[in-house]
Length: 384
Image (cartoon, rainbow, N blue to C red; front, side, top):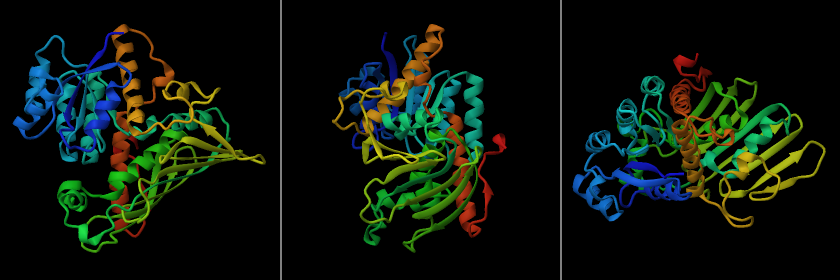
């Protein structure tokens, strides 16, 4: 298969997310890094892009990149938007309207109205708009989803998700610019910790169960009193398949490092997975013994087999999970080009609709927190 051409906006030198995307996109040899506008400082972005081998397709701004790539016959097939949150909507919309497939970092937008607009634009353009809930790329997360779908634990009763860390717990660090902006409504929007981390846990709950959140009740708090936005939240939610949900997210949980994990309890069994130990999925059948499912072992689901590369016993980490999102997208784009059906085991990448649902949940959590935990509709208006 001819390599697809990939471009990136943001993710410049020294960024946290840029290397993970570049590693993930190139890991399977399906994409070639072809174009980029990597820094809001034009000269630095061009220079860094040229050092990475982009030549004259290293652009000084996303607007220059849009114009330059639109004019080429060998234009990029996919662009990743990894810029500050407040710019996601404008850039994503512009590239979709120009006929490019887009992978946008989360949150997809800053408001529900913007999210609904992106869903409409993607539908009208006929182009893929994916959102990087990259942790759903882990092999055993996908195997958990497959087990639940085939009925291994029966009807799902309860899902418990969390994403808690302690890296913003030091009050002396509160004025650090890398921390402060996350709790500033002008830059972060209506929510801090839930919008940053909690939506990963909530999206994963929907991903593995195949159900969507319909309503929620939230208790939000700023444990550091100088913060306007929350640094800890406890969210109860209900799903459209009848499942009860519990979610805890925090940035002041000293001793927790990454802290993303999920437990699913059904009528005939339970499942448990943690991102810090991603090679093991714990399965407890009703009345049976605890089983440890290892990534890479024989007789797993097609969804798990397709997304494992390293032999059993060796760790697979976050860039490889990202790589599975890119692998899905490469299959989706190639299937469209070739006029065929895509591999159903690859049809798992998060969509614009997922980004929209997350934004609606963010707004509902923020409002419920203000109303002392009132139960609110968590669905965006277009899905009500």
